[in-house]
Image (cartoon, rainbow, N blue to C red; front, side, top):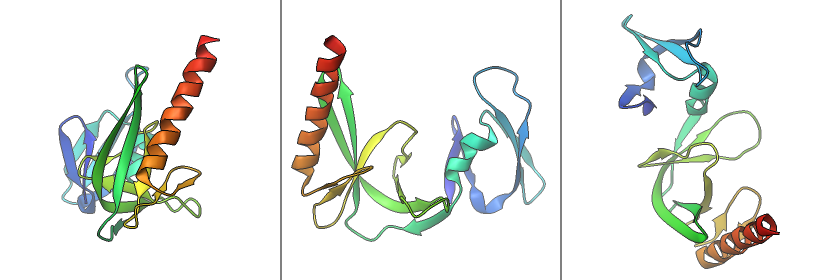
Length: 151
């Protein structure tokens, strides 16, 4: 599998032999040395913990799955939908499966829902009967947070 592990650095995970944490030279995060099967090494500006989000079992996605990313931009909800190519299972517990799209994996803190082929949507802790209901609930929750913040 190809993953982007640093700005403009994409590697083939099948060729990785080891990943070793290096002392950080700044407070912005860790560094790691990636050693490939052919002996080459690459130092990247992510620590092992940050790279661990790429670990796990990758499962091809059945046709018809989409991910919907939700963002509250200055009081206006914004939604972007993209096709799910695969799912990553981290092996830590009974779920969830993390979607992988043509944009890669969603970063930490990204709010997203999984649209099933039947049109239902699952987010972190709820089921929604349709994309429209998911969008409406997201907009309502954002409006409530803005009201509380203004009070």
